Length: 296
Picture 1 (cartoon, helix red, strand yellow):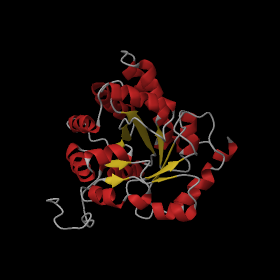
Picture 2: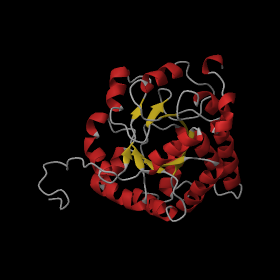
Picture 3: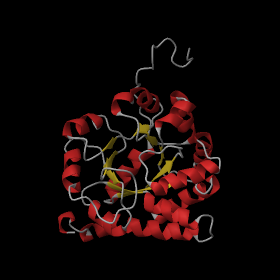
Picture 4: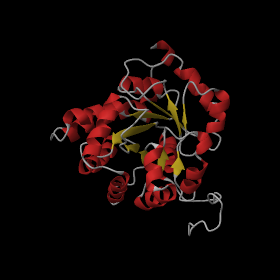
């Protein structure tokens, strides 16, 4: 029997917590500054965890507001070739959830940037849902994104996270439909991850024509900030999309840059320049320069 949860039949009821979360604090800060958030994604452990630690600090220095750390997994169904290959490199380097949490703990001695773990459900089950939430909170994680965890099966993990002041970020897609989007986002915390298109992650040259109407639908269902990801790779795309959301997520383009550079001395400088360029359209003094989505 679980010592923490006594005789509860499945999991403890959600507690009302007033714990502060860096994700919400960051969005509040950006609202005051009239800026949009740049959320960046790294595959933790690619090429190694020491480099990941250095890159998180580089991302923050370059202007990233929130960092997602991908937990490498052998069967990443939602990811395209770029992130799949990065996951394989990280796994070969011996990366796992425990070591990633240790990396986060070290980072918390140097930075308070919001950190989110993006992972599939299997590594969480293997580690233990309650233990994941507890150890993640102790390390300094702020939330989780779990692409293969349906809303109907997320209650237990959500409760464990909430009791530690962590967020389970909901995902919605253009195929979700308004009723389902409303259910998924009903108790959204942190932000809503809006998948810009169907399919897997990856770099795209063009953005979907129905993106604005999709985001309008999501906006009508929730007051939580909206973050758009999948396929975004250029500052021009960031400028267009940011008119209709509160945050833009860039993953595959950044992971590809890291994969191309590897452990080269040029890696840090290359990542810094890339992220600095991506953040520029999201600053308050560039609000008037954003391009119309319908006119692209």
